[in-house]
Amino acid sequence: MGNVELKISPKDWLYIAFIGTLFGFFIALFFYFLSPLFANYSTIAFGTLNGLNITFFSSIFITISNKYILPIINKQFWYSISFIFSFLSGSFGFLLTYTIFFSITTEITNTIEPYSLYLTLTMGVITFLIGLILHQFISMKYKNEEIKNDILYAKLKALENELNPHFLFNALNSMSELVYIDPKKAEDSILNLAQFLRNAIKTESIIELKDELDMVQTYVNIENIRFNNNIKLHVINHSDSDIKIPKFSIQLLVENGIKHGYQNKELNIYIDINKDIVVFNDGKISNDLQFGTGLKNLKKRLQLLNIGDLKIPQDGVMHFIIEVD
Image 1 (cartoon, one colour):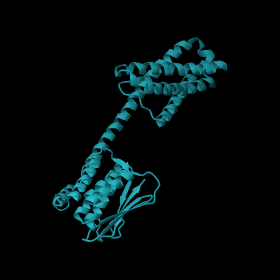
Image 2 (tube, rainbow, N blue to C red):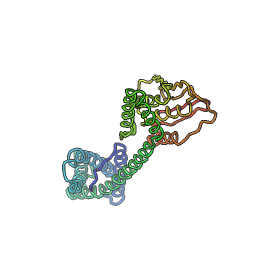
Image 3 (cartoon, helix red, strand yellow):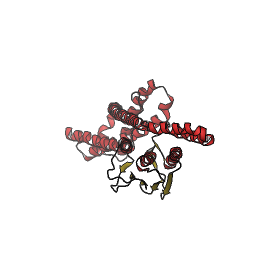
Image 4 (spheres, rainbow, N blue to C red):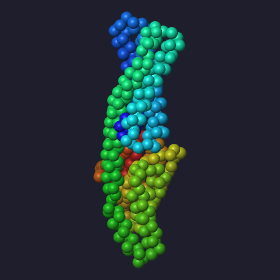
């Protein structure tokens, strides 16, 4: 009802079914005490089942509407379609309940039989009004979720866009020197950098582990121009599962390892993948490992994406753990 598709999750339907059944029960209870004509247990049973049946037909009509009707008609007619389906949900739900109770000849059906048509129409109108309130509630809920998702996406993009400019400047400077020394190697390096930047501008925030490792290898190849191939990358993968992680997560840890661990000699960087992802190296030992801007950035991205956390064991070695949930 309105110009928004009425999306209701299975969990929402459980709540709606419970509330609808409870609503029918209390309405029946009201009539039970209102008049001696309704002072029997069939009234309570009728009202309770009626609430459940109306919810049942509502779920059917909303599913049909969302899947087959709303996608092919102009949005200006959505309100009318929703009105018709809400009315039909109440009417059909009442008629089904009435038919069930009429077949077993209960006191309640004998009492309401002369008014069954009016009650069917009235129940349709009441269901429409309840549906209108439900629609506003559900629409507001999903609009709020969309706003939260937009904010989350904006935060992630801002964090991802903090690509270290020093890496780019250093790589370009090294390539410019390499043009005169080894043109073929310079060409390969430029292609590696182009591939790295192509991955950097992709919109996905979460990528497959294989793609991240390919990007890390490309990054190390570029850095080895400056470090004379002294950076050795070792990937140890014990996991058979298809892990997905934030883009540039392992790359950032490898970059950090090179920055703080390199000692003008061969530096071995290890990526150990099991339940968690551990990145460490055999370089410079530090007694004061702290989260800088880049590591805080990664920790925040892991938390925003609800994927895991970033830990640093205090063992003096550049040793990072991405705890994947």
